[in-house]
Image (cartoon, rainbow, N blue to C red):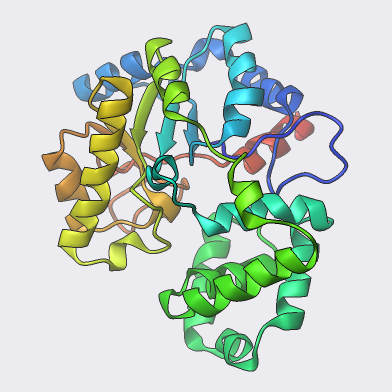
Length: 306
């Protein structure tokens, strides 16, 4: 599971960003012969013919850095991947969380951005970090993403709560502007275009669903709103690529039974989670729409230990 990439030699990277060299090192460590193209992966999945050594490459969020820095590595190795995109950014909207993560590199890194956020955060936000809800969120997230710092967890918890959205985004937008950073200018460089999606699809990659505007907690939405998220996403990808999507990944690993029913109704055959933790008592890969993935940060750490 891959997200952000950056050019070699950048002094401060966006959080979790890989260079092309690090990406290639991961793929060579895994073994290119083990990595299946999306079509073969989904065919084997439908026939129950996937074996433990069969792997695939997935990219979330439709970021331009993936196209610029990861795609040439795939081309060099003769590999194809799944690209999961949310659609609002193709309609002129934005996903603020990605803007903030990208802009953090201009302020000395995510830890510097988050530290300044907390220095500015009003008491009503900071008090939420003493709640049982935060304690539960922290324990749950640490179990599947141990690479997040305590400060990361605090920031993400406040960011993800719907009741905080207006205050959080107003504070963060002003923080960036105070440093001479335009959120709109950052957004203009962040995401793929419809032409990129067509090019990828024509080149044998799979373009899949990732919701319309990447809600922080999609599973908390009523069923009709979840359906709208995925139907709009589906219609956009089908129109942009000329191919109906057949794969997806769950944004922020948030889904429930309604989500799975909606995806099944849309003809989605393959869905990915955001971690490799077992799903309660149902196992690691409880259904074709709930396949586990390993994060790039963990994979990179494995290459340094080898």
